[in-house]
Every structure is written in structure tokens, then in C-alpha cells.
Length: 228
Image (cartoon, rainbow, N blue to C red):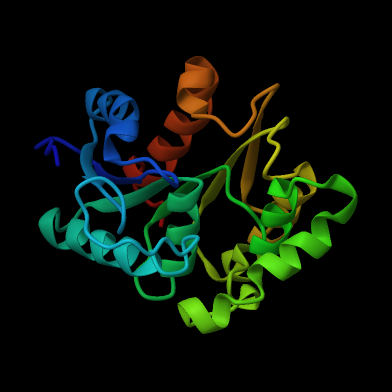
């Protein structure tokens, strides 16, 4: 956590699957130097956080809502933005029903678990079948099913500004998934493509494009008066 006394807003950052809060440090430095207070957090089962169940953002929604509530309490009176990468983005979307941010930057968010699992399947001609079989035991093992893990069904309920960032060569999140998310998020949602980017750290991939997309969005929605 890093506090800027003159800050007009606070940014909570959540990392992707198999990573930890250290992956978000370069973004945090950029944002802190730009005048924002910062909160970094390890999702359950990652980094210094306990647990071993990784729930595609659905279980991690509890982490997302708790850390947003903490940020609002710790930095009372300031607006709070959420920046999530992949798993972190999904956690923010699922957690918004319990605790919402004032603005969202969602990087490489998948539309449905079934679709993104199919894209990871080894046999292209049987991807849908393989994904269905692989996920069939979810309800029994995890207590929730594949139909619960659909960010595309939840994002439209977030009545706050949304910026989607995506790589147009992402092998795990098809372009059609990202466009479906954009449509579901509503007409005011913004989408920025990173040309040639696969499922990688988008800030490291193209820092200038990231800055050009994210910094004006945050300034508009956190710092300007009269903006909800």
C-alpha cells in the first residue's frame, strides 16, 4: 500500500492467475508517480495469501470485494478505481455485486469459462467437447458450476465506467469474447486493442499504449469534479 496525501483517487490492483502482486508493481509505480494512492493484494492461493483453490475469479470475488471495502475505509473520501488483469479482472466483475469501484480497468477478461477453457484444449477439432468434459465435475468439486462463471452475464450490472484492454492475438480470449463483453458492458464502455498481443502483461507489452489508454480514463473518472 502506498498513500499519496495529495491524491484525488486510490487504485486497487489485482494480478492474473498463477502470479502475485509483484507483477502489478510496474503499474503501481506509474500510478503512484501520477498522483494516485495504491493498494496491492495477493489473491487467495497466490503469493503470500493462503488457500489452494483457484476459482477463475468466482471464488476470488470475495478477495476483490474485501480489498475494495478496505480501500474505501482506509482512504475515506476518495474515489477508488479497480485495475485487474485476467483472473483479477474476473474477480472484480464477480465481486461488484458486493462492493463496487468507481471505475474499472479490466485487462484480458474472458467472457465465459467454457469458451476460454475450450481455447486451451489440446485437440482443436474437439475443443468444445473436451472443455465440457473437463468442467463437468466443477459443481461437485468446487460448489459452483460452469454456468456461474460467465463474466459476460455480470459485467452489464456494473453501473460504473469500464475500460476493457485486450490483445488481438490472445490465444485464450478470442476477439469475439472481448466484443461480447464490450456489448454487454453497455454503450459507454471503452475498448482498446493491443495489436499483436497474446495473453501477456499488456503494460510490459506496450507501455505507451497502456499509458495513453489508462491515464486519461482514470483522470476523467477519478479526478474531475462532477464525474460519478
